[in-house]
Image (cartoon, rainbow, N blue to C red; front, side):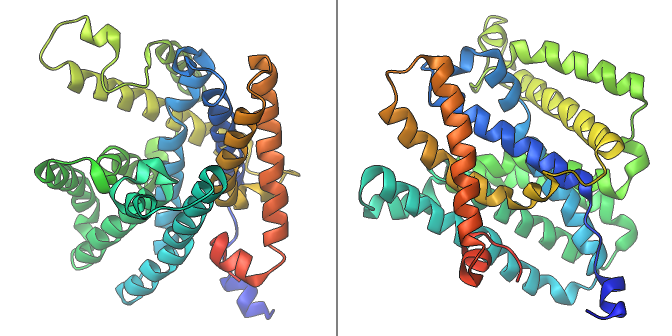
Amino acid sequence: MTETANNTQRKRIYWLDNAKWFLILLVVMGHAIQHTYTDFDQKWLFRAIYSFHMPAFMAVSGYLAYRAQAAKPHVSTYGKRLLRRIRQLVIPYIIWSLTAVLVINGRVTGTDLTTLVTDPERHLWFLWVLFWIFAFFETVRLISARWPKHEAAMVLGSLVMLYMLVSLCHTQRFGLGSMKYYYIYYCLGYFAHRYPKAFTLPRPAAFALFILWGFATHYWQMAPVATWVQDLHIASAKLIYKLFNLAVATSAILVLLNVFSRYADKQYATTHLGQVTLGIYAIHQTVITLLAQSLSSLTPWLLVTINFTVGLLASLLIIFILRKSRIGRYILLGENL
């Protein structure tokens, strides 16, 4: 590689890779708990993980979106970026979702094919939703390119626009409900990168926010409206709980960004594993499902340990094998060659 190429190649942000590795460990642990306990949503660790881990992944994606746009600021690359995201997100989503159905159920039906689009929450929904959020966000930025000074205002306006568009559709299918919920975190990551000083917290403030988040997770529930909010018997109970969830997830994301950017911006032995989180996400849940079905007689704590350990290691092993081939890296793992 020439010296010019070296200069133009963008340096990896180590703390982001470390943060992604940390978050994917939480994803695997959350699914290990979910596939072990019938009352998984009553476990504090599960609540703590699920209160922020996927919003945080979305925020990291938004953070990287600004970095990618900074590297390629010309709107002429809009179509190429969409095609690249189809390869990196949509194709792995389809292949790995159908693979999971085939391995677990022994066959793929027509219903399985249609639910890939109509009900992505039954599959690897994050990849599907992330693609459409990326497409919507890039379209907003393409339009705002004519008025660069007002880009931030237009991105903020797109939050209201997306919420209204999804509400007018009167459906949560096709991933629209998840888009409406997660888009704000994508924008949060984008603004955190664009205006880093505004998101930098003093250490005492970050610590206090972490304590508040830990306290709030005791009241987080995996439900449209938590029981403690329902007990208030007020008409706006659903809105109150949405704002509560937003505050809890945002608090955790701000702490995560501050802690990792300050203390983990270096290369560790596991840093490179932050680059294969898509593969871990795509593979581990199938492994855990099979383990939970065959080892259901074990004590819960032992099954959680096995689910987490084997699910993670089996995913890494499969990724290691797939990365040996160009097709595996380029198509199945969405990596660049």
